[in-house]
Length: 300
Image 1 (spheres, helix red, strand yellow):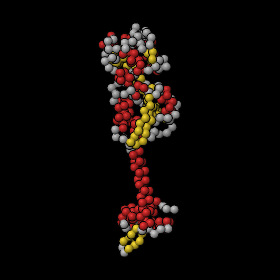
Image 2: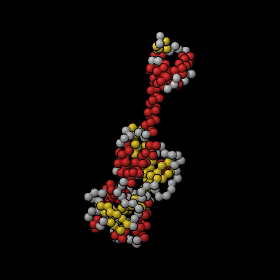
Image 3: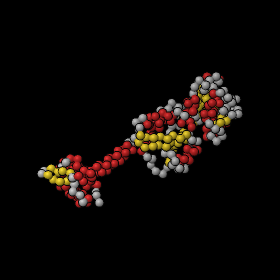
Image 4: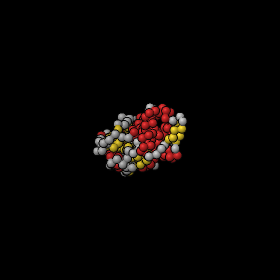
């Protein structure tokens, strides 16, 4: 059976035209090159080189064989290049699960930065409900997830990220729009457009208002923070929402203000547990964390 070292010696002789120069090319002795070529001739049953005076001449059989050997080494070089690209995180694919709020615009900047010098990396960003993010990342259907999470969740490793504050959104013509910040007591008697009762942010908001003995009307609810912002901009009340959605909707039709007492917004990066993340995931996580740290949102 042909050995890789025999093929390497044969290729070196074909490229350089001599045993000595071939030995210099691959860093072994001239007798070793000669022995490897003789062994290859013995294995193949072919005469590969004829000696004419002080020169070697490749036989016709050697020339034909050299074409196939070259393909072999081209394949090895390609594998080495791919390995280097993977090592440097310049190729591969990432599947990212993200709930709606950061997917609106924040993730666009993160992905733009990450792919800027990685033209062969493919990204699949799937915007799905919060609970689905946690479940599917834990099942390793995605490489990385971005969700709302307070506490532990089986099958996930949770990254420590900045703890942002929820904000209050009001219509521009509302009396509270003139205030630089809004306290829970300022909401006395206001119509509050709420998230659904299954929302962690809704539960936290209700707890704050109850603790402050603030009475609000709650005639309108929505499961989507985007809808809360739309309803507030239409003048149907005020809302307490995450800073990602508030910033996306911040315009002439909606004002956001700091809210107190502070309500922590439990934003989290989650990874499948059980094994170290691939290099590409580590690189993306680093870019994501840098982008989070650069956000102008208030933290707790």
